[in-house]
Image (tube, rainbow, N blue to C red):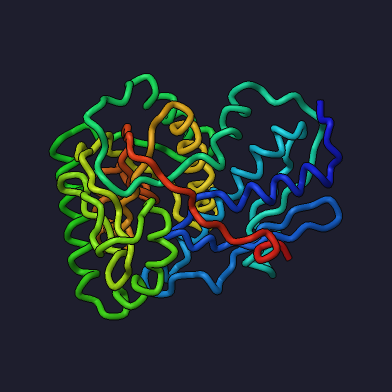
Length: 320
């Protein structure tokens, strides 16, 4: 049972929510805390109008923050009571969270909670170390428990298709001036996630066939020399529908998968380029994912690279 007061549990949840992964580290969320209820809001000032015009990636990011808060509330000894999109008149209010009955968190919840501040996004190749099939199956179950599907892409041909579409999308985006300007504006935030150190401008060495975004252009930081070049396990996170509610569910599933993977020494690298172009995303939905809507493409693997701390918005900036 909880030894923390309700207001302490809610404050701990909000503080932890800041550590969720987000599109290009934009951290596009704010929180309200009043009358023993957390309100999770989309910070539309941090939306990417070119890359993410519909706000899909923004809501996935906020969904990840929601799962993080749910996990911490359980660790604090309470059952979280969540309402998704509770007020149609306030579309930026994505969820509310209140405290339910007192509970004893199980070991799995404590393990997830312990990874919240340790988990880091990877932006390069992986070591040539296999990811156990049993672990992949547990990640599939984690995503399913949040209303999404994690599908490991086993066929080399299918992996080749995903890699080719990722390269094509990145090449097209590189020729799009508005997209390029937006990427440059996001570079200081996104580059902070790479563990980069001041040096000559150079991108980390990617896995074969899976390009990374070039955040180092015109910036004086650089990732260390990479020796890990394996692709890891390529996987897609999909949902049956494609509404804001499903985007939030995808974000919760994503964070559940990432925390569970991190607890077993597995990191993730993200490749969203093809999903940001409607025709390519629709092609993937129809041809590879049985009509389900792809929300995230990632690679999962082992890395021995050291990741530096990821800067976070200070609590007073995100707590209204």
